[in-house]
Amino acid sequence: MAKNPPHPGMLLIISGPSGVGKTTITHEVEKALNGVFSVSMTTRPRAAGDREGVDYHFVDQSEFDRARNADELLEWAEVYPGCSYGTPRRPVEEALREGKLMILEIDVAGAEQVKRKMHDIFAVFVLPPSEEVLLERLRKRKREEEAVIQRRFSKALSEIVRAMECGVYNEFIVNDDLGKAVEKVVQLVTRELHLRAARR
Ligand code: 5GP
Image (cartoon, rainbow, N blue to C red):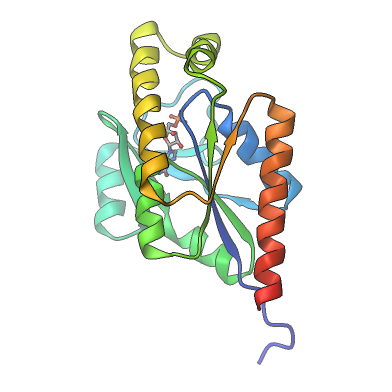
């Protein structure tokens, strides 16, 4: 038997509408708490700046369907019409076995599936300060054309309502200042890690 059994890991989910700054928050939390970022599989087209295997595993629909049918995904969702995203199961299981903090940046539909499979998750939802600010941030990214921005905006609003009603999220934080939002999430996750360690 191992002399120092590994600590049970923790699965952290960070969700929030697009444009809310959750990717930055996720990576800052990963750095601050030595976490492992889950690299999702997606069928969405690769955009400029996207790094294969770092930001996402970019695959075509047939590879996505194969992985899904082979039960290689812990959860998956068609986040936008024709664009599916899923969490590869194996890296999550490995990280948790090794007692690491595994971080999933996924949408609400995905978080609901994970919650059903593993109730021991800790989930944080990042909110924009207001609808106006969210729309402004989506436009400022200059990543998509206006029609796509409008689709992302209306999806964002329904996502917020669903997050509040689904009962999956432990904490809601408002990102009106990125530095403070990062600090807040780090604080909440650290506290949760301590609470769990004390219960062991
Ligand atoms: P983006 O295309 O802007 O990188 O991501 C779009 C949305 O997909 C974000 O809300 C993000 O949280 C979500 N997403 C990314 N990866 C996954 C995943 O593996 N599963 C699910 N369900 N959603 C994901």
